[in-house]
Length: 386
Length: 249
Image (cartoon, rainbow over all chains, first blue to last red; front, side, top):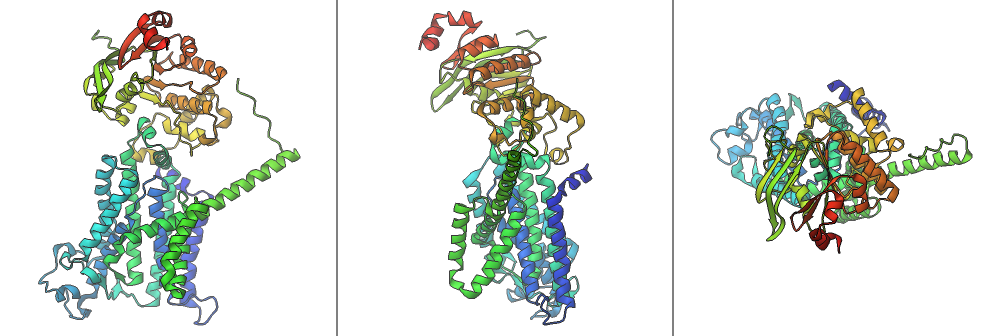
């Protein structure tokens, strides 16, 4: 039954996207590692983690699209799940430093020594083991989303009110993580990482492996999301988005469906965050900033919400634009981003991918009607209903 | 009430008020198994509120609402009541516009409603056959792959009735099914509802008198939140109080 559901996820489009992502996962690292420096097809060293970062952003946008595009829940706090996954990974990377820190304490990370901690806080236990950190990457964002969603969806908080409380959630976490006595490095966050699973983070091969892992994680998330939206579960989610109370009167427990989508989405966002941190080398409370979460919404809207390819395209394009723009006109980036959002809302309400799909359908329809006019393969008139 | 053969739906002394306005006032109503009942009444008589109470959208301030003898509907939510076998068609046709006709029916089809059953659901041949039968009944076979948004008003009404059939409820609550339909469509709809009422109970709220005549149903007249008169259409339309409160205007 589960295999059949997974197989259904693989229609032509999904297989194509997955094939492209796997090709990227192999080609980019291979070109960086095996082509000689100066070769025109070689991906430069600094580009590998940059592209890897885009892929984790794409995963984050895909996660948001599952709840926003398909279930109509506009979360303005998805950055929080991303950051929590990132912190779980960051804690593992901190413990991997061991006695190579400035203060050479074998157990305590530098910031704890600096802040006069005598022993490791209980919630840092276990993070010296990768498997434990990996479980926390999934569990912490998932659990937060589950508890948050449980209360919000049961009390039937919807629409703009839900958006506001998700925003409040990420803001509260921002303030909490800023505090030094929370034990997460306060303002500076977690950084100065040395290695992951014994491999040095600065090494080209490690960066290539992290890039490949990001591309594969994105491909797997794409398959899972596709398996969700192409099933009856996905149809119920769209039904909830379009006519929530009608869905209730059909006997569906709308809160459970929303809770499922919200939690699944938070887990994907958490994994994306965990892959992001080793590639950028730092995680700090700034990741919880409400503005970050709003940016995710913009990527998704630009690419096309309610399509699975859209958020990936949107996240990569907008961030590539941001990298270029902040290099050339750093002070104008936010204006450009705002302008882009307004322009997309006005002229491409379905985003880039949505508009392309619409154009394609229109073109096909025109071809069909043109052929029908030629009379070559006119469909027989449907007999009128009796 | 006869304890051995309780009616399908039993409302007794139900009242509900919104901001001091009594929308339903000491309403008592019985729907028997396999009965087709029409409910008429002027605007604001409490017809839609009554449906809201039966389907769990509104909680009554006082009174009893029992389904199939001993199920207390006032303690259940919308989803639980729908699962019990009470289907509802809204006044304004509400179908899922971005789904195809077929998907609308598939969503309504009586199947386990939990998240994981839905995720791993694959329609069996029996399910497909059942949906095809319903499509034929509601005369939408030709348009099964069409988005529901592209249907005409009357076709949306029929699709919604088809969704009710797919739910396979014991009781159907149908709110103004022929509003905005052509005369021919109205006649067809009456035929369709009579057909449906052969195997289950149907309650129809409607304004259109000729439609109610076509239905040949027992008529209940509501006014100001309670029952004014009951009986055949000829009987109630001869009632002077009914004429004064409703027909005469």
